[in-house]
Image (cartoon, rainbow, N blue to C red; front, side):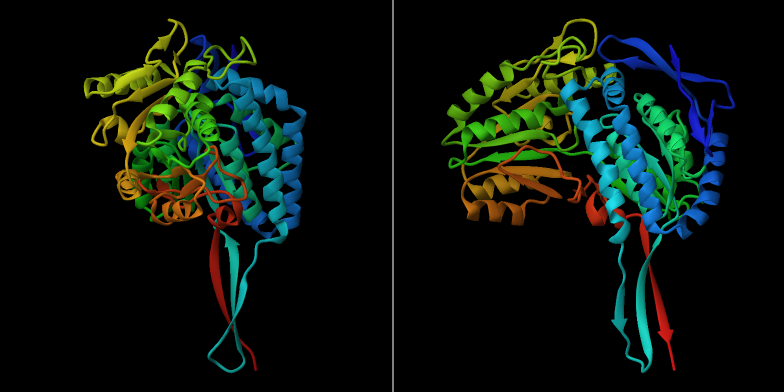
Length: 477
C-alpha cells in the first residue's frame, strides 16, 4: 500500500502525530493508499513557509514566474498516463474523463503562463495640476486552496496556476477522498525547482485542515470548491479575520429544450452533460424542461440513450461510459433522493438501481411525471439522475428555472436567436450554454450566483481573484 507524503517548505513530510487516513478505490472498495492526518501544527508550518516565500516571489518578474508554470506543464506531460490512472483509481473517472482532466490541467498551466504580459493597470487623469493617478495590480499574498474530490487534479491548476502567476504563494488542502494525485503533483513542483514554500500540500480532515486554513490571520484569500455546507463553514472561519473568500459551490443546472431545437444534438448533449464524471460535476445537467409539443418524442430519444449507458470499473474497459460514485455515502444519498422522488410521484423510465454489490456504481436514471415542487427539482443530486418536467411557454419555464437557490450553470436548446437571447437575459445563472454540452472553457469565467458561490475562476477575471488593486497619486512639479 502506498504511503503518501505532505509537501511543506520544499520537504516531503509525514504528520507530526503519526496518524494516517486510508484512501479507497470506489470501484473495488479496496484500500489503495494512506495519507498523513495533518494537524493544525502542520498548517502553521506550511503557512509560515508560504508567507516567507511569497515576499520574494512578488518581486520576481512575471515572465520568470511563467517559466516555472511552463516547466510544471511539461512535467505533467512526461507523466500524463500515470496521472490518468491515479485519477481513475482513486476517484473513479472513466479513462476518457481522466484523460480530459489531465489534458486540461496541462493546458491550464500553459495558459496561465501566457498571462506573464497581460497583468495590466491604468493611468487615470487627475483633477490636480501635475498629478497622475496610477492604478496598479499587486499579488494578494498567501492563498489557501481547498480542493474537491470530483476534479482533484484540474483544481490544483485552477487555483495554483492563477495564484503563482499573480505572485502569490499557496497552501493546498486536497480532498480527503482523493489526495494521491496532489501528492504526486508536488513531486513535479519539487523536481522543477520552484522555490521552497511557494507551493505546499497539507493532507487530512477538512474539518481540521480546512477550517485552520480559513481561520488563519496568515491567509489573504481562501479559495474553495465544494458543497454549500463547506462554503458556509469556510466563510464563518474566514470572517474572524475578514479574509477574502472565493467560493465555487453547488449547482442545479436547468436544461430547456424548445420545439425548434435540433433534437438529436440536444439529446446527446443532455446525456453527456448528465453522466459526465459519473454525474458528479457542479454544472451537470440536473433538471430537464421539455416543451409539451415535443415531450413524448424527445423523451423516447432520451430513454434509448440512457438505457445504452455502460457502467463499470474504468479499468475493465476503455468503452465504459460511467464509473462509480466516489464513496458509499454518495451512493446512499443518490438512492435516497431517487426514492423520495418516486414517493412524491415521479416515474422511473430508465435505471434507478445500484449496479452490482461491489463498488459504488449506479445506473443512468431518467425520471418522468416530475413537478416543480418536488425535492428532486430543488436539491442537488450529484449523481446520474435526471428528472423531466413538461412546460408550455417561455414565461413559465424561465420562472421555473430561476426557482432555485443555486445559480451556476444553465443551458438552452433552440434555433431561434430571439428565444436564446431572452433566455440568456433572464436566466439567473453564472453560465448559460446554448446548443451545447455543459463544460466551461479555461479562457472564460467560471462563476455562480446565489448559493453557487462568490468570485470565480478562469481567464483574466480568474487571475484578478489573486490580485489587489493599488492606487498611487503621483504629484510632480
